[in-house]
Length: 66
Image (tube, rainbow, N blue to C red; front, side):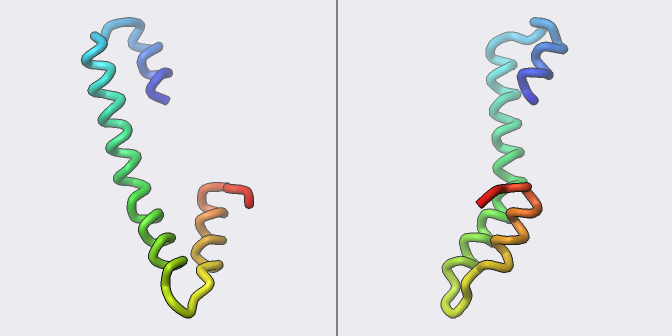
């Protein structure tokens, strides 16, 4: 996605600008994924639960295969 943005800007950004934007996208992605990943980790580590319900929901949400 970032590469498409850079291609559309057609070389108008410096290397430093591109690195900054890539870092911003990585941080944003991390913020979006932190909650689901934390919830999955907590659910699978909880005693007495098998974690399948949350794991199945995340697989459907992110269209993941087994």
